[in-house]
Every structure is written in structure tokens, then in C-alpha cells.
Image (cartoon, rainbow, N blue to C red; front, side):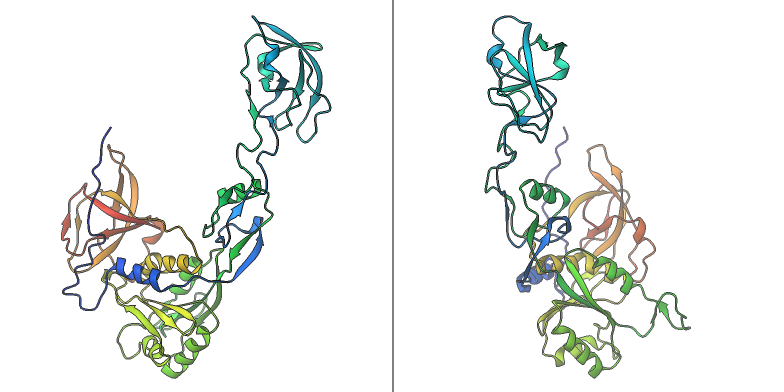
Length: 423
């Protein structure tokens, strides 16, 4: 067995900010989001069949014992092991049958057997089930050659769930596995957090919609369909998709109206310091509280977070790859907090570099990577792009996640361990 030493490091490596001014680290940005985000309080009852991907607001407990009665674990014959005394073989008379969904009409008598099918209640007097493959039927009798243990092939009442047992705690993001357990516990509906209401505001006079004429200085709109797809989850309600007005007063009014209607406003672009970047000035005029504006990472340095009106605001960069990466890191975490998810999955893990990696020191870089297999020690191997270009998305379909390259790194050799964030 190969023992891999635990890696102790300083996370993404963007914590040393001496030469990066007011930028904060990735982990500090996530910590501020966690500290300053209030979960949605309203709840609703939804049918269990529609609850996958929703977040439980109240725990789910078993309404009764599961299974509710002793029953057969497989097809065969219900017997009492006390009848198998002495040396075998033993011959027992068959007195009736019981199928799943039917109540046994007979009590098992001494020296007898009752044919039984998987899931059927165990007749009174029986304490074991012998598989039909292990008996020889001779007319009205069955012959057993091997001894049977008491309780063999019997599912005991309550062995899976006791009445009142917590099946899924509040804050659980429901998966098909949870749905199975809740159904077994007898629930037709569950109490979940109301869906997080989100508005998406896209800036940029240069973007054109697919299917429309594109001007000589225009580019296709990537952020709108990309983020709409990212927001298409059961616990999110995308209430509004708008394009930002191109004047400060109009944008201020636009953001003000949205801040009274939704839980989260996501903007793309317009958060740098250029004359055409109106988002932060508009927020300032609305007395927004900006928690951070700028993170020491590449791509996505301008990413920002705060509150405006009754809403939380997440400002993503305008370049498509930057917007995608910062949504993966910050947007998905923010939505987890807003929806009240209790579990905080640690998604990052370490992978082995397939070849030498080169990096310009300064900021933590999140570089696209693809998993290609495992090395002889069972560690995942990652190949990666040679560089990060914030406006290029052609490699995204074939990539599995992001490598966290520490800020002070110039080169990492083939075989080095690096943090990896899966998509």
C-alpha cells in the first residue's frame, strides 16, 4: 500500500497581498460571503416527486417503522426452525401460501411450512424463511437437507427505520438518494426553502444576440446563455434577465427596482474603473454596502460582492472565462448560502500534474484542466492549458475543472501535487 503524506499549505496562495493593494484572497472572499449572506426564510411544501434539488427547511422523520412488519427477504417457505431437530433431511407439510401485499390466512403449525414470496408478511409461528432453491418439493411436502438458522431471510420490523428517526436533516440538498429514503419513511411532500430569486443584468454595448445581425464592432453574447444555464437549478428561480442601461441614472433606477424584487442580483461587466463602467457608481448612489471589490486571482480579479436594498449583489467580470470561473467559485457558494444548505462541501482535492507547469507570479491562477487517469499510486492526473485567457471559452467543453496555482509559483514540475476544483 502506498501512503501519501497529507499536504499542508496556505490554500490558493493568494494570501500574501503585499504588492496587490486592496485585493483580498479567494478564501477571504468566500469567508465574507458566508458571513454576510442570510438564507431565504420563506418555506413551502412540495410533492416529494418534485423535491429533488431543493433544500429542506425542516427535517424529515420516519412516520412509522420500516419495514412495518416482519417479512420474507426472498421467495421460499416460512418455517419454524424448532421443527428441524436431529439429523436431516427434514420433511414438512405445506399448508398454504402468502404473497406480497396479502395478510397470511394461516398460522404456521408444528411440522408445517407455508409457501411465501418476497415482501410477504411472515406468518405467525414462523421464525425463518428457507429459499425455494434449497428445498425439494414432493407434492404436499417440502424436504430440507440443510439446517436453517433462526431469522434466516427475514426482514425484521423496524430494522431499517424506527418511528421518528431523522431521515434527512434541515439544510439538506435533496438528491434522488434522499428522495428514496423520504418515500420509504412515508412522506408524500416535504417542507423546503423557497427558491432563491435571481436577476441577471448583462452589460456591454458590444454584445449581440445569437441569431441577430452582428455589427462590425460587436461580439456574440456569451455571458447571458452561459449564466442562465448555470442558474437553471431546482433551488433557483431566474426571475429576470436584463441588459444594463447605458447611462448612470437609468442603470441606477434599474438596479434599484431589482433590489426590491429579488434575493440576488448578478451583474456581468461594468465593474472596473473605466468611464463606461457604471455598475459600481450606480450602486454607490443607491448606498450599497460593498463587502469586497477585487480578488487576487486570475482570471476574474474585478469580482465584487455586497448588498443593495434587500438583495445581495455579485458583480462578475465581463470576459466570458472570467465570468465563468468566478461564478464557479463565488456564485455557486453564494447560492448555497442563500438557499440555506447546511452542508459545505469541500470540493477541492489534490491532483498530479501530467507535465511541467509555468506561471507568472503575482496572483493565484485558476487554470483550466482535464483529468486523464491515475498514476501508479492511484492519484488523479491532470493535463492543463498552457495559459489562461479571460476571453477564450473554446476549451471549456473538454475541461473538468480548475487548477489552483499559488501566487508565488513560477514553475511546478511534472508529478507535483496541485489543488483542483472540479466543475
